[in-house]
Every structure is written in structure tokens, then in C-alpha cells.
Length: 225
Image (cartoon, rainbow, N blue to C red; front, side):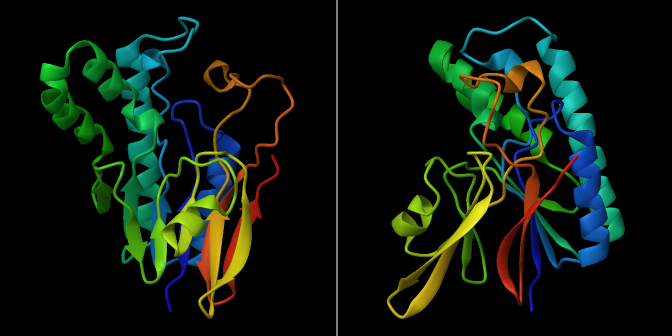
């Protein structure tokens, strides 16, 4: 039977280093057959359309983020030679592409091709279309765009795994004689970093952790650091 471990939003280079180490250790212990990164691998803060502080240059941010992501995937594939790995895109991963589409739409295909190279890693299958769902068995994986837990499952009429909201949890529903679920895998970023401080107040409901699906069912595994 498949055992799937799902990493939430990392927002490299603004990740939570301790939480990521916990997930790498979990992969070593759990020995999953599949590992999925659910999107927002990078933050791309430099390309946000919102008011921001000039804390890093765009090239430096992308270079550091890419190096961190490559090291992460290298560690994962090194631990589990037979593991099937998948990289999904999230809304933050599209920030640079969106800015080009707004200002120079004629160049969007050229820029997208170049940017997609940042998301390709040895031994990892990248889902390059952010609208495309990854399906493993009977479960659909997508970065997500709705805020209420369960809404994606309702829309898809299928068990669904998402990230995006940074709030981990799982909900079940009986549907046409089957039990469906929606699992949100939380996040793995550093909420104290400036790019993550867009919340209306310092207190948040965000939950560090990762997702796991095995013979016991889907669950959110919280991390305390």
C-alpha cells in the first residue's frame, strides 16, 4: 500500500529550518513511497505586488531559494532511492510570471520556460501547470485556493490534499456511499520573517507540520519548534 508524505508551503528562503529538519527525519523514519511538496516552494517576495521592504535583491532571493530547494530534494531522494517525488506549484511560485504577464504579456511564454527550470530537480516530477491536479490512487493533490477546510473536497467530489492556508487539519464526509476527506498539510515557513508578516495581527492560526496518508488514513502531523 502507498504511504504518502506531504510537505506544506516552504516559502524558501524564508522557511522554518527546524521544522524542515523534523520533516526530513520523518521521511527517514516513515519510509514513504511518495513525497509531495504541495506548492509555494518559493516565496518570490521580491516580485510581490504588495507594499514590501527591500530586504533582498530578486536574483539573490531566487538563487538562495533554489539552492535550499535543491538541497532538500537531494536529501529526500538520498534517503529513499525508490521514493516517487512530486513538485506542485502554488500561487507564490507564480509571482514573477504574473508580473511579466501584467507588464509585458508578449514575453510570458519565454519567462515561464526559464522560471520552470527553477522547479526541476533530479528524481522529482514537476507539475508545471498550477491548475493541474496530481492524482495518486484515489486522492487528488493541489496547492489550493479556498480558505475553508473541506471546500476543495466538496468541489472535486474526491478526497483532496491541499496547502495554501497554512492551517493544518483534516475533515471527512460521506459521499455516495464512500468516505471522502480533505487534508490540509499546514506550512513549513518562518512566520517571523518579514515576507510572512502580512497578517492583520501578530497572532496567527497557522500550524507548522506535514501531512501523512497511509493504511491508518490521512492525518496532519503538527511540529513544535
